[in-house]
Length: 166
Image (cartoon, rainbow, N blue to C red; front, top):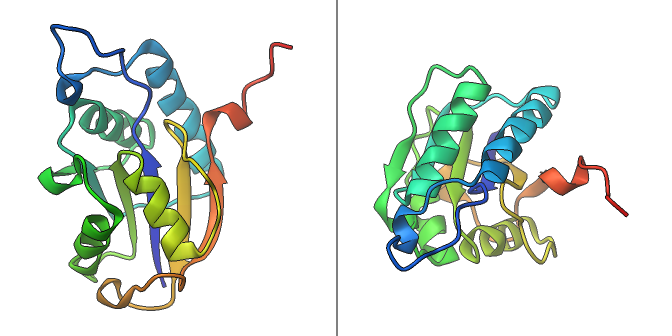
């Protein structure tokens, strides 16, 4: 069994004139949401063998914070092609993942992160919010993963666990 945990990066600071999109830092809400999602993933007994993330600052910081919160002894591998990637580029990357890994975490951007989850699991989720995690299980090696063949395991995101202020 192979499992991929797809995560959209945590909430980032707003883009400003002096800060390019690529270098945006995590907002305070984004940092809090990473802590919350780490607790959720721990509760689900998620094990992670490798972490891959976009080179964008908000993705790298999301990966590092989540790894620290989960007490993993791993370093994230930044992947240049994840920034502005299409779901086809993500799928191409997945097909090249070393099969010594069984459980991998991919942290990237919308719309590609939502699209690949929908295509691989044949699910209609609409949007993965920031810090959201969609998990998919496959009964094949990474190189053989095809659209619609994955089984959705869970879809977790911060607002599911926050009390409404209504």
